[in-house]
Length: 277
Image (cartoon, rainbow, N blue to C red):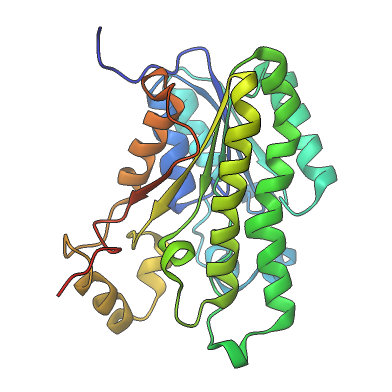
């Protein structure tokens, strides 16, 4: 048997795909043969100040021009794949339903869902955590995955095949100092992953989670350098990961090579969860 990742004939929906991990995921799935829909609150031709309410990272992306939703779609089309860019707020069930309907209409199905959309800018010790941002993080990071999963579920059940990959974090397994809301939502994503794995199995749907450590995305590069250095120092491999490391793992989990893997939280973390000294 040839060992290769071949997603030819599959259609993937990647949320939060305007940059960083989501962009790498979308490009890698396309290189493996999939047609790809990229959904994000940030789309070049439709960017507005309304996105400021989703936090400082979204604002910085807009003001610094770090939005690549439509340009990524153009790259995918140059590969000979079909692709579409969708402006979508994953907390709005109506927008999610409309986005999935458009993917089915234009690309014929939704076989793969990568729940990547998330917020990561609510930092403060527990007594300083904002109730408003706590609720926002729950809506985006956890309910967003629920909303998107529920929207694609009937299509996957009908076809008897589906791959859902949720983006968790080591903050959800280890906790995160100053990250009460983020770590809580990512722990919840792992619980959601296992439940969807159990319920989806009888319909040919697998559900797994990626558990990244520190990855060298735009958000990482915007963060405090001293803090970044401290995190890298406690990583076994002593370096940040690359978005491509995450994308490679996702492509594998979406392929037939991983057909007997479900309910897993796969660490792609450089060993940050290990006891390092």
